[in-house]
Length: 122
Image (cartoon, rainbow, N blue to C red; front, side, top):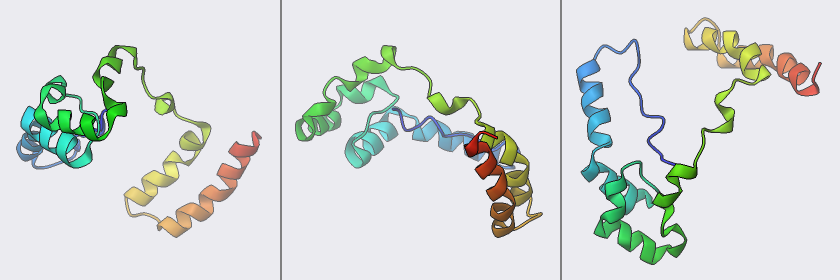
């Protein structure tokens, strides 16, 4: 899993140049090497990271990750890309929360019977 798959720019954002600068920087080879090989010690989306001394140190510390980059051609999309019934049925309520139209407590109270129904398959 590459942990950069959720980086994005808000469509309604007002500082698009700054947002793009950050997304570009955080995905750069130096930032990926520092963040993923030295801090997180997790796989990166940048193949160059796997050639770095920092990643070699990760492999030495955690031998199980050796060769993880060779798995990329075998990977598939996450199984939760398709919306579940719960997501579909509760989406409008979450939208109201995001717009400040209702509180989270009210939203959860409204969603409880919907989720119970969906989980029960009714």
